[in-house]
Length: 439
Ligand code: AMP
Image (cartoon, rainbow, N blue to C red):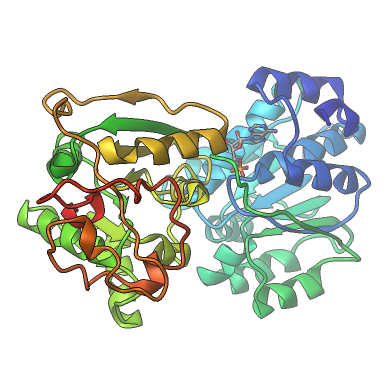
């Protein structure tokens, strides 16, 4: 299905084509037609699904269809977002998609000088993107007149409520015209969101799209080949030399996560491990330290990472490739969110070539590969089996290596996974460990 079946005007289709989009995303396919019919919508969509274009494109079209006849421009569409960053991104999207149309837009948020915003509003805008607090300042000073708003968009409504904006939102709703179109976007639907939606939306079209299961185009993926014993050293080097401030690192086992976090700490890099054996309190603390920047590296297992709510992560590192290719997609989906660029680097040793091939087959594309100077793999190193303990057999993997205990590994995180791509059948050279234990 292409964009031109959605009923969008030539100017919008041109802007979309210039942006390089070939086909609409699921949220765009589902949301654009009802919005064009002037229906309210309640859409469950995460960032990264293309939701911004899903409301911006039809919004622009509606404004154009009923082009304002009066001498003065009035704010006809109001888009509320929880954060300045999101406001700025949405504002950019409005400008990009509306570039062939005579619409004017403005973005207003707090923390910056209010005067240029007042000036912009005084000159007249059709679409206003705003965070709630600063918008109320303008309403209070009568520098923003919301009495002509025809369409209201609440973007990331759940985050707005989490950030305590409900009262501000209610105050804004009170000054909007009673008859208007309402579009509510939220990643989650808590009771609070439902309550807000009940009071706000009029027979909405309900739209739900799943998180995209393909690797996001905004994530720059790369593979660095390196010897298994030098992965930790390379990781520390990358963090230090590239001055990464916030990195999520994946290991395959809890034991590996703990060890890696300890080793990084020894290298002087603040790190914490997060996995199923840690108490909820310890996990919450690690996460909040990470979010606040007190901890630079969070080392996580796949299962522990599922529940992590961290937006806009710039760097994800696969210290070890996952056994299951789908986990790769989940891992790298942790970066490149909310319209930001992200990178996902995989440190791949000899033992993991088959896992890498499986991942590339699933992605239907090759991941760019290279080596970091100084960390070139030693050609004499031979592949080792990646051993996973089969369900119910705690000692099954001891055979494969030097006999160093691996009891720290969790059953729940290793045994439930299929042994995919692992070269478990190959005999292991003596005295060496498979990569997850070396980690
Ligand atoms: P959003 O969910 O609005 O943050 O959008 C996520 C990313 O998807 C943004 O970088 C958009 O530029 C991009 N995007 C939006 N629509 C499409 C599309 N139809 N095809 C490809 N990329 C898109």
